[in-house]
Length: 187
Image 1 (cartoon, helix red, strand yellow):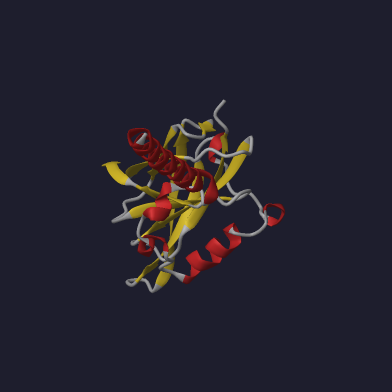
Image 2 (image 1 turned 45 degrees about the vertical axis):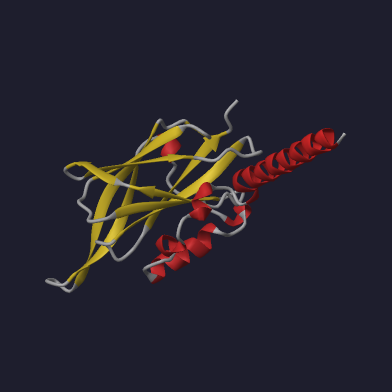
C-alpha cells in the first residue's frame, strides 16, 4: 500500500507541474500577447517627444484610429526628419517600407524591408490596434546599400483579422514614423 501512495503522490506532482506550465504558456500567448514581454524594457522607451505622441495615438480605441499606409497593399513611402547642423534646418529622409509576403498570416514569418537611406541603427516596434497583443520588437540588419530587413512572427489571436501598427525609429533621425498592416488568423 505505501508503494501505491508514493506513486500517486509523484503522479499528482507531475500533473500539477504540467497544469502550471500550460497556464503560463496560455498567459504568454493570450494574456499579454507576446514572449517579447520577457525582454528588457529599456529598448521600448521613447527617445523623442514625437515617439511618445505616436505611441499614445496607437493606444487609442480602434474606432478613433485612422489607418496609415497599409503594407498589405504594397510598398509604403514614409518620411523621417533629421536636423542638419550645417544648414540649421530639418531635412526629410524618405524611405520605402514593404512586407514580404504582403498577405501576412499570424504565426508565420514575415520580412519587413526598408530601403532608400542609410541608418546606424534601425528598429521597429509593433503593437496591436484592435486588441492588446503586447509589443513585438523588430531588429533590422543591413543587407545592401540603403536596404534593411527585419523578421517577425505575429501572434495568433481570436480575431479573424488583427490590425497592427509598426513604428520605425533610428538613432540617425529626430522623429519616428509608422505604417499599418493586417494579419489574418492562420486557418
